[in-house]
Length: 388
Image 1 (cartoon, rainbow, N blue to C red):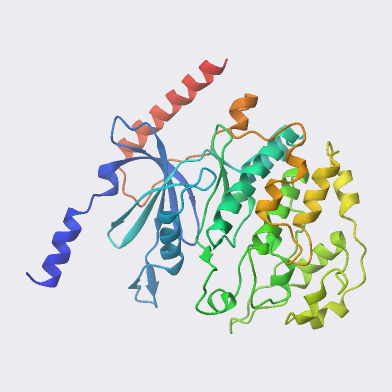
Image 2: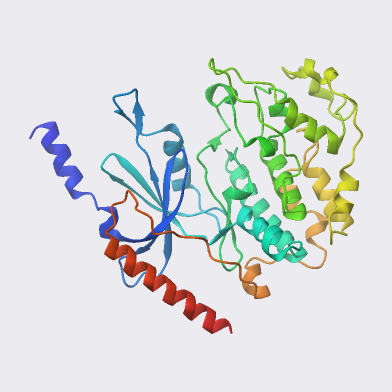
């Protein structure tokens, strides 16, 4: 048997996505590919899934296929090893027509969706019991990652998912990587990590080596956004030039300094060791206004809540609180205590994630999509009736 015959025979034996799953509809797309909502064709399995279809890597104008992206390889390798209630679960990986399909457990919401709902629809703050429960579960998932030597490196509200019961599931590990024994400095592999508004100051000052403290800074930014319903450090990102040189992010650092004050060697002794420390003298001197900002947020009163907020946004990464220590913080010992399935316990329902019926490249037939959409509408009506 020739190699080409063997490959054809092997590919024919692989299960097809549409043989195993019914596609409910399209959720979203990004640089990596597209995400769909699906259900198992196994009638005994009533779970819902999110299927992430990766675009195959292509090169040049001829679209020559060059294999699987590094991001997809990392996400598959890590998700196969991880197993925790607050990390999104990977059901299986399917390979079909040179495309990869990652099948994840389904989460109905994400933090960004909840923030937007309260900002534009409810027009009132997220209740403290929800914020505390969301934050504790986010920290619980991050503590698990860090205990297993995994840096997430892209924590932001859109990447923190939430089930309709209120269980937090941190997702999108495309930038995540192991940090226990890197073969080369982390900076060499990925010049830019973490979305700009959630990027830690050591990264903004050009750190070549960094630690799990970068994830904790991002958690602090997410906590602030859940409180204020808007990003707390909303800078303008300077883009890379044509030679892929990493620019100095003056706007983002200005936003941070305006809230936390201009850093000094007293609060961050090793700051002068960072490559872009020379720029610090060009910034105006600002004082720390974090307490004032916290007190101005409607409905926020807890002193220990502020202490945790401040510990997450510590300038010096060596002093920044760890996920493990944050979980034991007095804030979580106070009433109201955090709850695992907080939405179910509080009988709170948020609008379901928008799933559209536009054409999709999984090649589901319109009749399949139509029948699934009808079934989805019936299920929603039944759920609503049960809660009346």
